[in-house]
Image (cartoon, rainbow, N blue to C red; front, top):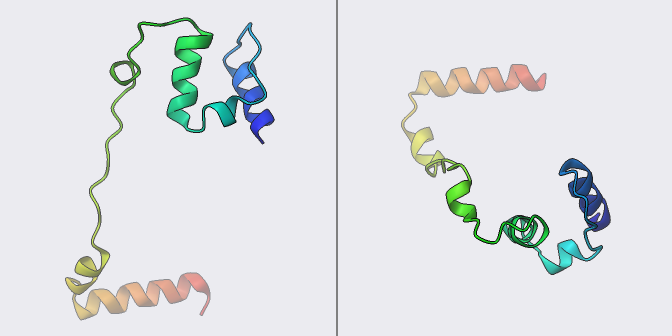
Length: 89
């Protein structure tokens, strides 16, 4: 899989330089691979990856039990019936 990833990156990014077969082992996270590609492969030494990357919103954690406890008996019955219909039961 590591070699497949390396080949896909090389092809998709249309890189003119080879990537090592040990790319994933030398750079074991997506961030590390991205940093290596930007700085070492593409030669953008002054690139600030965090400033260049679009902000990805982080969803707030969901307290499922609290949400369930706030449901009325009728809502629970409707959800349960819908789930039974979906599962064919």
